[in-house]
Image (cartoon, rainbow, N blue to C red; front, side):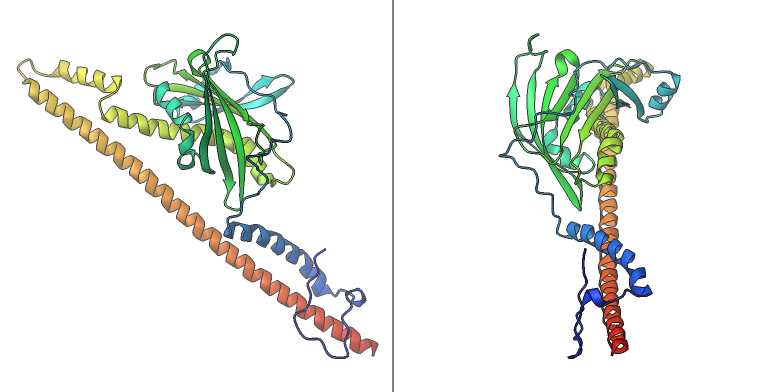
Length: 366
């Protein structure tokens, strides 16, 4: 139990004995508020110093070699009904369940207006996750192992080991991930923790499956994502909830966003079948006597216009993200100051009340 000691000088004939004081109504009423403010203020002040939980260790092995059942690469074979298809056509993620053994796992499906190679480039760009993935502060590969795909290793192509730091300003969790790449044969990527390193996650396993879209396989992608996470008891519940639920839709959202931005850049540069087909349509509609250089000039102007629009869109999104981050920082900073000031006021009032109550008891007993 936390005891607040008085900062005021006591009378020379007064001896402060907490056990001899009977709590009055003001003291009892203030205790719940004091506990609440103390708890919140301690969490808030930790974000001021930007302290991360120091449980991870690059040189020390994890406490176990796996609790969560790892994913198997390959097609999840999910049948989509009319409702699911409508959700995907609207550009939204569709959530469902997949059966693994005796339990189920959440799975998110998302359509992306970009080819599969563009989507894979974003997912495998682990060194830049800090600038793309929500709640990811740092990400860096520390080892890559190439493999010759064979039936014996289930056509494994590569292992990528990545150090990541995720969470919130008040609490950052560091963990070490071992990615297994099966793109050529299974169109998939799975991961577990790197159990040779100690992570802040108790366990984590995940899965990506990337397939050409059935309606437009050349220029669109249908991606599938699932993750299983086990957290230690000391991790706050709101962090556990985020990692186990909201992280599903957030993961597909950032892949969709940055894949489509990158694809728009490629289209603007004239490197896509979309721009080629559009050029063919313009050519068919052009008069027979049109000069060749006029068509080339128009095509070039159109490409430059698309490039400018893509660049402006990316710049506006980056600026909006920056402004939002500034607003959140201002709100958090103001909230922390309010809590600290409130805590000081409550502690001062509590101390004064304790001394006054003690004086009254002393006078009464005399």
